[in-house]
Image 1 (cartoon, rainbow, N blue to C red):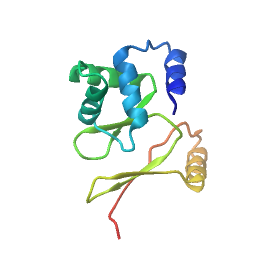
Image 2: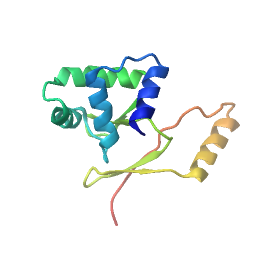
Image 3: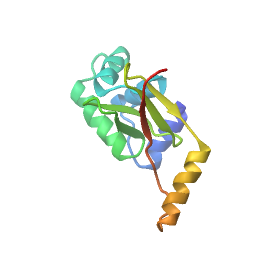
Length: 134
């Protein structure tokens, strides 16, 4: 997701783009992992040394509520974050904690069929798989 796209999303939901929010969105755009709030805070300080941990937590909550950021619980006792982008699943390596994203059209078709068979339209889904490297 580009800077322009994240700014457009904020504008679409009426969310003012404050300096801390710009910094957090930049950190999340640059992330190649699914960082925790503490990791986001450390990375944000590289862009803005004055940013406070409370500001990071508060704004992550606001961005999550606005649908711009997705919060994940991968069973580690803390949350990890990413920008809300195309629907995808996650495979979590039990040994290293590494999170690998995946998309699978056949899985999405199956999930849609499951929902439809029960009288629902699939609106959202979260697929998390835990595995061990072979």
